[in-house]
Image 1 (tube, rainbow, N blue to C red):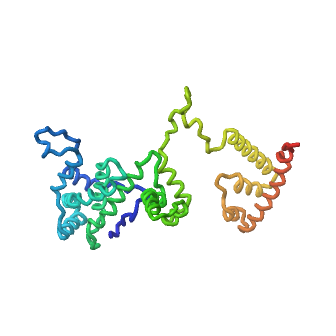
Image 2: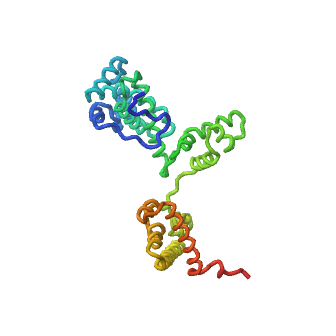
Image 3: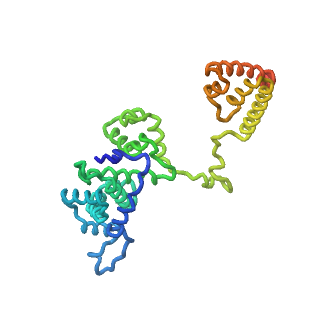
Length: 332
């Protein structure tokens, strides 16, 4: 495996960058690209490809695999001299591998050509990062990158709301239903606890993913099913943030607190007032050591002064502010 960067052994947490422009430029002119379907005439239906996928598979015959020795020579030319033609040959000689891996996931995605495209991008990324001096075949190394791109593409596009944002979710996305069917075939009463134990995840992860796989996405802008209703689904969703009344109340409480602290600071000696301003009122409080250096005292002494001031401030606020708990209705 290359020392430059090891490919993900499972699904990636973030989509890797696309292959370099050098590899892309080398392959763009020669790598077979899926073309729109052609409608053949009746007389030559037996020889004309019927769709883009069939046409692509036919084109792959023009790019056979190469020997291990030739692969090593091309990889050295690419790594040592930046030979773009060598990189192109490495890519096209492994297009069959990329196609084979893409077909493994055809049941998870309706458009196979999308998967083939992502496989080819992953292959180019692998060529870009391949180190021929590690003694590893390019096909072995590239398989990790190809699967990484395909899996990431499926996860990112399966739903409007992204799935598989954690390692546990990615594992469940691809294995939950399969494991559930296998356990049912063996006669087990399948529940979240058993699935969580078998897949090494939490029960909560199992319940959440099962629910998300069974239910489709619903747009917040979708109209409600109420007759003659002009409302959207989002109009009935509760807000997760603080209410407007709470926000106004918090802002007013903060304003009053700041005001009372400044009134308290005006009654203090210059050094004590300085500590209040720099340690309590400041957006970025200074350290005890910085104030100790300024006052030519120890850090511990500043801490003692601050504690004494905080105790005095607490008593001052009790006397100055309304005790709302005392004035709250008793319920009688």
